[in-house]
Length: 363
Length: 69
Image (spheres, chains in turn cyan, purple):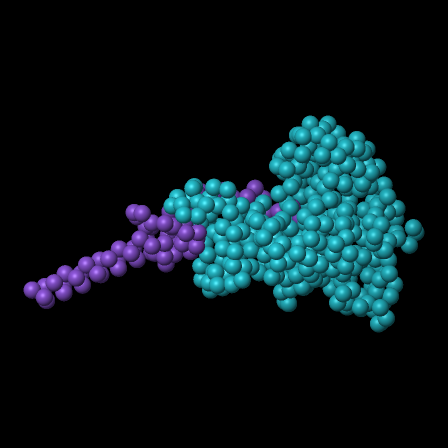
């Protein structure tokens, strides 16, 4: 989007904003800057493009909860950095400088969800500055959550179709992830899957009872995605300051759950791009505790289908598709063989999520 | 003589009104031209004026990626 379009207030949405309650404070009331100046440079002295402070005056409860929400705290970054490195990001100025330059941009202000696209993806008014109660799925949510969630949900990967909730019903992100998911509820989760009242399939789909043999046999110990997600993207190699330096590739791997807040025994796992020297550019050689967290991590791919390679036919036998997959050509399970050739620390990191060799009936 | 005076007065009045309108910030807001002369611009005046924004825009730098999540 051209720069001028990003800041143009026009059309019906623009008129709605200018005449509405969110313009009561006026431009300078929220953004600062200098009134009565005739050049862009003079008028923009002291301007704040993405102010949130003024939102507090009316939306105090939401604002105060948001301070503890993952989108605000980025607590997961700090926690996993500390676990893997034995140090804190705040310990050294060079760590903080690197974090601010490369990671902290993912923090979002109020306006980056409700008024414009987020800054890290280029910004730009979504609806001519009209304040949208519901963020736009494409211009807000998947603008950031794009390379994995967005591509999966919209069916952009050539190896998988769009999520069934996208086609044909075209549900948006906020149909499952409500405001409490995103603003927080006053608790302070460290990781995203710890957040209370996260969107769950069971919010809409009750699989208790009924005559579905798959559900009655595996429903209690399988994450829904084990049977119902299509292949998804994994990545190798991320280096601070450079981004993804390895490859991304199609995967589908079932393994043991490692998230303590999840009750399922079997989940799908996505390889994340962390490597031992990810933070070399910040002055850190290798992550000394690299093996304390798996690099094949619990995942919730957003490309759900009723029929997948594990559930091929209505009334069919999933065993042939899944249990016997170890015989090839595609083994759906993450095994020791998948880690062969990787560094020792990588193999140790994933020791608790890989499943044994052979048929599931022999485990 | 009176008629000539009335014509001159009318022309002067129109010129005065035109001058006031042309030099107000509202002209910027309503769009159309980049103002010249002693105009006091307003935030709304510029940000609702497409031509003005195009004239002062800096080259857009595309983001490095489309998000990691």
